[in-house]
Image 1: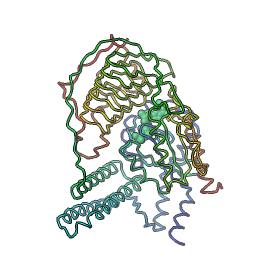
Image 2: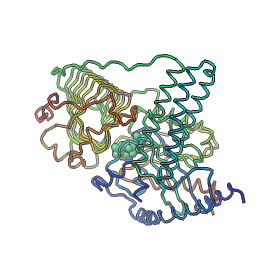
Image 3: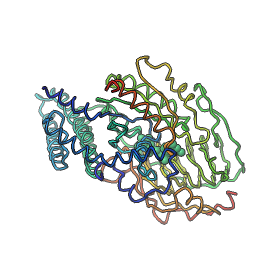
Image 4: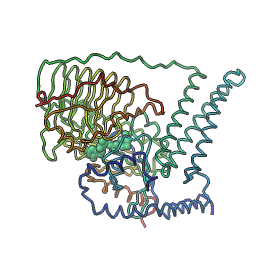
Length: 363
Length: 185
Ligand SMILES: Nc1nc2c(ncn2[C@@H]2O[C@H](COP(=O)(O)OP(=O)(O)OP(=O)(O)O)[C@@H](O)[C@H]2O)c(=O)[nH]1
Ligand SMILES: [Mg+2]
């Protein structure tokens, strides 16, 4: 079944069963698993049936090399077409045909996308990944040709924002109660979500006491120049619109979703970390899977270095005791290419903060 | 016998169903699929592209397409619409702030001609999180009652984390598709 698994199959094998609570319907499940064992068999029969019927309409190859040949051929032909368009652009007589040609290429690239999709169930995850990368590169080449040959508005990257020195602010110490301000009053349903919201220049401290099944989520939103300590275990953490803040948080069992932060330092541990619209921010992470960024710029990464009494145990209980090294395996969804994304970097050793012992702050 | 009828016959004999899983990023699609498939869910990265699983479910073979929901890759969802028998829309019931996004993305999806015949299962996921919205609340926020009357749909509260609700949801979906496609033999 190796080849059928998604691109994450390797990671699954590395980390069998750390964090799986009992599945209530185990029995039903066992039956399903049995059936799964026969899956490979039935797939073989199915593909035999397919070739018997000589189905040629939709190119499902079921052979890695046949797929790769076909993929390479299409790719070469699209690349050649891009070159062809550049040549056409220099000749005024054929310039009018340029636009339909470019559109045709976009369609060929979309076909290639579909080809990968249709065949990905039997392709090794490496092939899927590299095919997708190749497609992303083709799209980029086409886009470049589009914008060069059919001039429209100019596009440029913004400059790196200057990194501010982290400042230390002690104005007020506050143990937050649940603040209930609903963010979208037009929603028919309003829910009181626990969190810190709309604060400026404060030190905010929250200690999540251990209560067996009572772990919930927590939100940090609209904070400016604050220092935030979250201690204890959580299921999910949402971070939204923070500027010039420093956040030190313990173990988050599920995922952390971060949107619109700038000039911050965030020290976080979780199974998944997703970062959207971040600018000039340093992340110190312990993370089980690959962290991702989207629409972000000048973000930097380093390993998690938080200490307080009992943190080791809390990390272990959340399956986060292991330093996976994934803090450095950042996927930039806006940059699916082999070369390093210009949007993120690793913080040089000498610029990293020291291990943060917050036992006194985070009581 | 024409080619098409041969293909139909193969499809019919093996009782294949094509299921498309979509929803915002972080809603739990990949975790749900792996959990239903009995696989380890302790290390899952956000989906860059898509995963396909074939899951034997009762006497059917489900071809499950789990497509990444990050904003940059949502435009690619439409590459996967063709021949979808069942649509699973996954909601993170604890992510109150993005429910607006969630509603508009679902609305767009349901306008899609190629999905008009598909049964719709809405999973109100992450029910294990204290204070997550209940399925009835999600129905209101997503305005599901206003949906086209011809659409077969169902909402099920679930947790990919504990597994609760997952089989109930897939049971409904598979039965609903079967009653349309295979006339419930
Ligand atoms: N507490 C809790 N966490 C969950 C549940 N389902 C998923 N999660 C967590 O939510 C995060 C996102 O899950 P994924 O399965 O990767 O989400 P996805 O919808 O596939 O995301 P994309 O691939 O980006 O579209 C992970 O960290 C999961 O552990 C659930 O039922 N309860
Ligand atoms: Mg996923």
